[in-house]
Length: 169
Image (cartoon, rainbow, N blue to C red; front, side, top):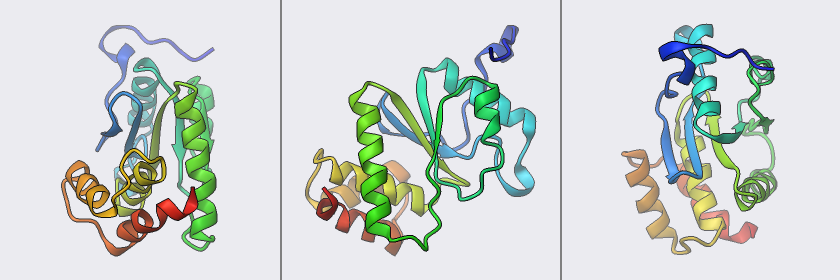
């Protein structure tokens, strides 16, 4: 059983760079607890508690390393580790990833995905999901929508993912 906290800490804290891609269904964030020199164990726990207490049913980590995944188990937070190394076959990885995300969403599971930071990899992958799922089919519209969500222009990788996503259905 995960530890239960009292007082203001019982609800945890919102993960950094938390962003909805599909309101109340699919979001992204920075790795819970931060990364590099900014990583803090206590913050990681507080952010995982926030995810759990806010009804997220699954955390999907695309970080290649497995360290810190045990924290999800310790805090009773279901997770999937789907490492994206950049050296894998992009199309095959995306097809499998999108199928899993789609299955979770169809089962009414609230999902959050993260990389080390909310970078163009995770943003492009989620923008690609919007197109792959058929919610929005026109690639220019998906790129514009994804840029509005991310509040910045997308890099070539993110655009490539969005452009190829419909071929993976």
